[in-house]
Length: 96
Image (cartoon, rainbow, N blue to C red):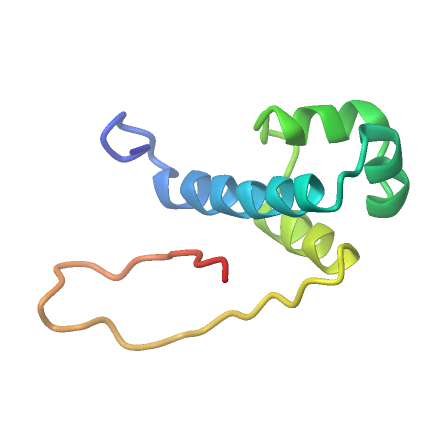
């Protein structure tokens, strides 16, 4: 999606979006209000509000992964060779 819009950092934006989606899904499942989420994540309430609204400019991939850890989620990074059938290597996030 971001690549189609011409963003030079499309893969990073997509990765941050998927990580934020996983975070928001967990916050929904745990029925955490923003104040409770802020305390659990070690953030202030405005940062939780930004996260909940997918305003991710202040969040790096590493920070989002750390926030997932704060919610007792393991984050696994898998590195594998690019299949010959694909023109370029890619970064992807799969939440399971």
